[in-house]
Image 1 (tube, rainbow, N blue to C red):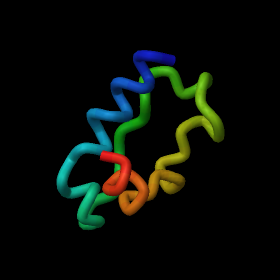
Image 2: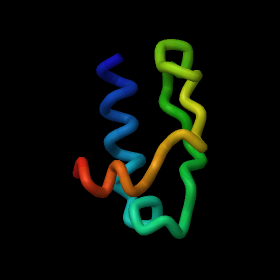
Image 3: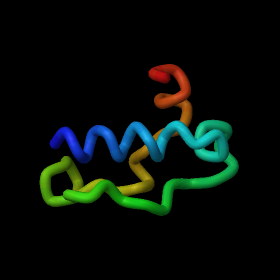
Image 4: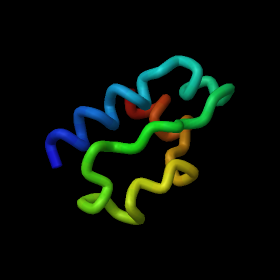
Length: 52
């Protein structure tokens, strides 16, 4: 779970994702351990912009 957390933090910090011009294309390493198996369309850049 820690590896997934670290991988997710790296991918959501990309500026192109945060400003909404590019969607995520890369999954976390261990998809079977996350809710909805890391569906990329569930990642909201507006949420992560506020968190980071």
